[in-house]
Image (cartoon, rainbow, N blue to C red; front, side):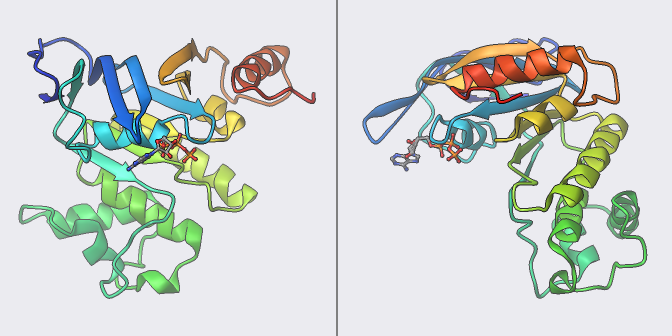
Length: 247
Ligand SMILES: Nc1ncnc2c1ncn2[C@@H]1O[C@H](COP(=O)(O)OP(=O)(O)OP(=O)(O)O)[C@@H](O)[C@H]1O
């Protein structure tokens, strides 16, 4: 693990992510204000928050992409982090397998890439070009590219936000399976309360620069929309997001 920000020394413990008292000021506003958050190895945390509440700012800091975040509090995150964005960001001039293994060291990289593509349901498509794929298939490649690196931490910034509802449900199932197999710690940013509840072990809401609520999801699988416990959790999260529940 590496201390990515702040002057405090990281102590070895069982957390993959540990953030204490993190402050990030942007445009004269404290976007992250004394933020605390921990994620255990293999734990899946979903992060909700209104537009502009600082979710992407937090992800950038965790990904090591924000070089100005240093100097406040403590931010401990692993060096091996993979990030999945809303758009798959594949290189259109490289075939799928090349996209997946780009920069991956070792003589077994190609085989690992083929296995990863098979895991996301794209066996036999190794030599296809990204532009031959649907949006959902491109996101599958993006997941394969992330997980073939066996990261300790997977950051996902609205990865399914651009997909249609049915594809999104399929991607939920796939992501859950992949995470159960590879066991990275996950921080998933989403605007979709149902997606958060469907996937996460804990759902946190970012508000006023802090984690306003952090709730374990203790519903048994499959987490159907019908049950009273589901509805209660959904209403609680929506209320914290300032949305009145309609059902
Ligand atoms: N480089 C910057 N300079 C000034 N302000 C910025 C900068 N980057 C982000 N902000 C502001 O910081 C706040 C948080 O932005 P951020 O993108 O983290 O929010 P978000 O919760 O991810 O929003 P959304 O859900 O709409 O994607 C916003 O008010 C944004 O305008």
